[in-house]
Amino acid sequence: MKQNKLYIILLGVFLSMGLSSCDLDTKPSTKVDEDSVMQDARHYEKIITGSMVNLMESFYSLANPGYGAFLRADDAMGSDAVLNRKYGFSSHYSFTAIYGKGGTNTFSWDLTYQIINNMNIILRDIDKAKGVEELKDRIKAQALAMRGFMYLHFASHYSFAINHDAKAVSVPIYTEKEEAYAPLAASSVTEVYAQVLSDMDTALDLLPENYARAEKWQIDRSVILGIAARASLYAREWEKAATYSDELLRNHSTSYLMNEKEYASGFNDIDNGEWIWGHAQRIDQDNASYQFHFLDTTSPDSYYYSFNVDPYFRDLFDEGDYRKAMIYWAPDPGKNPAEEEFVWMRYAKFKFKKDQIADIVLMRNSEIYLINAEAKAHLGDGDATHKLNALKKARGAQLVQLNGDELLEEIYLERRKELFGEGFSLVDIIRLQKSIQRKEYPQSEKVEYTFQDETGASFTKLFTPQGHRILNFPDKSEFSANSKYYLYQIPDTEVRSNKLLYSKYPPLDIF
Image 1 (tube, rainbow, N blue to C red):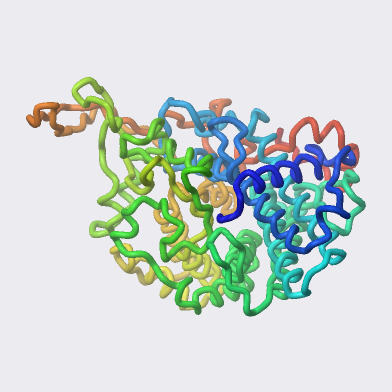
Image 2: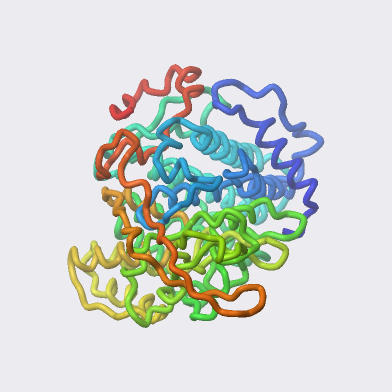
């Protein structure tokens, strides 16, 4: 982002805190002076810029670096990540964080509605500003897409799958059409998904055909189509998911699949040809890079190296799949192996760049292939297998010829393998009504590891392997589908202050 960092952050924070209340139940005491500040449409573009920075760079704690904290939590609560006992996401791994209404719940609620409120300000007021209509339409399209993206987070995390209970309570829907900041009743999960898709369709209609973004953090047609495809898949709108993803894959830039060298380069560079959308980092704007202290488990530059993998996860990859070669046993990086006792199954997918910065991926082409394959598999379209095999071929994996439920299960498995660490594990467990799959790895099977000491001499030592240590829910019940432990909860402050919250749909009878 080339804009002045201080101005962007101050604008983002001021708008988030000054134009929205945390619980959405009172009118804020301060507001932007519209006459002096917001009379030019270009200022509304800066709200989007500031909001993106606020979304990605805000810290609730060192374990919660912006929106990326939700992505990391999703994978920590899945089947394949094995977290150590170091700082960060350990409570999510043990399912005590969001069920206990801890900090992540409040952070998720406040940050998501802050961004929604900022987008609503744009949509409510931009037509009163000076500027050409094409500029206003583009800004409105981007605001709608960002708002829909935030409501997608709510729809996919605060209620079970839409086919489990289409009328299950989710969250209130605040739009520019509502009276400013008046408390509203929570809508159903079906209604929230419908809002997301409505926002995406309107955004696609408004975005000027000739708009070409300057940087990949900005929202263009490919990003809107990607969000729409993702939301349609989660909402089980198979035709829409296939249509949106088909349009994306007709474009060369969004059909490209990275090669082995690119895949092994660290998942840290927004200029990667497969990335559709991401958040760039630089020396003077690097808060979001902190996530790589959890994700990067193979380099000394990392500190926590939390997101190791289940040893059984490696067995899911075919021989010849280059992703499998990136998964191996190793002690903590940067430590003296002679003084270490344990080895973990490391995945060298995420690596810091120089100066401990790393860009954050939000959407890439592989996901679109998998969305397209899953949607078409449900529709009985033979192209589903072609799309799945295109991705498998790019990764050196064995091709398949499957149909029906077998094909769908293979697509779900490929999502686990391809999208590991990118924030999809919990969402897929919820929307597919699946259960966590974890089993203990025998520590008696010692692992032989060879290393060099400070003189260069080689030594071989036996280490104790580490696998999953959390094998059931906090109440000691077995992992199961549609568990109360999977869902984010509305903060108590909102429940107490918003008397209308459950006036339309009753609260979920699980807490």
